[in-house]
Length: 461
Image: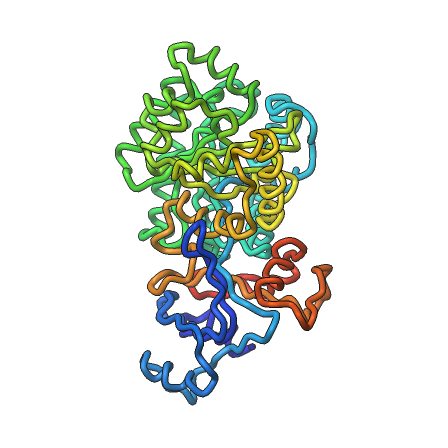
């Protein structure tokens, strides 16, 4: 085990033998028993083969160019398995320390009374360094190998967030929050030009930090239309055209209060889809958080343009209203959907918790639609947390499952013989691998996630 950890940190190849679980599609969960997986020095999956007995491993290693006698293989026991790393498609890094605060009040009141004052603390770069280090470490501890982060409106603090993600080895989309109105004077961009300048500075900084965007990538981040003057949205649309590889994220149809305020500010648009498309911010790189109250025309537009939806079931159901996004309808239409913790709007930063809540609210939606929208299955929730999230973030050609050639972003799960005992439902002798997987998904936590890998590198401390 120690040898494996050393290899993972130094760009040496890895090999595992045991159970591997991943999604090929929304409907196709693969449980591969007696599977050999080889990860090359480039952090990419070189070989994946199920049904391999122990005596066959050396020949497979040789076929892939390795000397068996000196090549360490990690053997996974019963109750241990590999699965892809979790993808968090929507969260707010500067809200790390306010998780759990302000539940039960409306969205706009929560921003005014809780959030803006907290995010304003990130004007202090030392505070930003300390809090972002805690945030990224915490997400990695919970198996989130990819995160789409909203930063604060501060340029320097957001550059620090990018640095921290890169140093700790987390795959991340990092955005400077653009907001120049409808926020306190002490927490908003001073002008349109300042907001756009800081956005360009972040792009330049990340290009210097990670030129190929191997781990960290900038993401254009208008907080929502309420906080942006038309000139700012215009400027962000121009940057999106200049950088056609950059993703875009915003809050979209999050609450009735937000939708009504947006209509007052932009009476020339019938819907938020009309608004964002007019400003060049709605395309196949857009990550739209929440999407609870979409009109029929908006759903068609999002489907046609290839936008992705970040489903945030914890935040949606713990504000003043209990709001249920019609996720089954989005999936039925072929719209990309992933899970978001939305912490601190969501009290939990765990994708496992988000999966469970997605299951709960989908049952509510099934009841509300009198069965038209069937509840999500466990397999579908796992897809949303992994490959679905990678699709939303535009990274499914690199991560999300264990297809050969993809990067090895993975979790090593132990459900037995833990160093620090957890409270997961105990594994019994008669339990099948599927039952063990189900127990982990519904009752496990970060104590069961013993190793986290990003691009073949061990990153959980």
